[in-house]
Amino acid sequence: MSAVDSCRRLLFLDCDSTLSAIEGVDELARLRGPGMFEQIAGMTRDAMDGGAALETIFARRLELIQPTRDQLQRVAALYLEHLEPDASQAIARLRATGWTPVILSGGFRQAIQPLAERLGIGRVEAVDLCFNDDGTYRGYAHDYPTTRARGKNTVINAFKAAHRPLRTVMVGDGASDLETMPDVDFFVGFGRYARREKVRAGASAYILGFAELPGVLQGLV
Image (cartoon, rainbow, N blue to C red; front, side, top):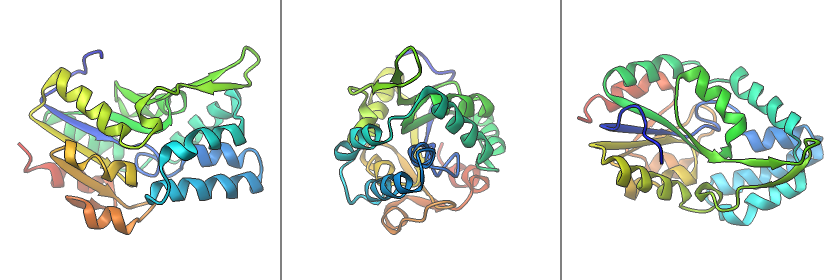
């Protein structure tokens, strides 16, 4: 694991329905038509609400969609188009007070990377998709932790072992974010785009916009 720019306070940020309003896998499905979109969006909701184990649907969604490299690039553009409006300023403020942001996602790294660059975030922990020379779908990184339940916990614990931060925080909207609570000091539920009662009830704090985040974390020293 390569070093991040500062390790005193690590801020793990979900991407889909958090840093951006969209769900990337659902937008890939939308490019395949309304029927595919409805099927995949339902599967995503089940996973994010905690009703279906992530590992049971991760491969299945991709098998159904068969995304191309060009389609993944279109989703990358959508992430930027629907960027959480307060994210850039909030992350800059938090970085100035010693927090290091890391995007931690069950989405697809190639699509998320441009958003990370826009926000000045140097580390993206997400799943790589693989393509044939002609850009057709070949598969994904099956062994990457966030393809399965509690995978975000695995990544967080690897960071903690490598960098021994004073504080760790996770921010996200879904069940896979909430399940990191035993392995972080503070979990912030995010509800601007997807309000999930289980996440709201279980979170250390719950916000509806990134403008609230610096104030919420101010007391974590």
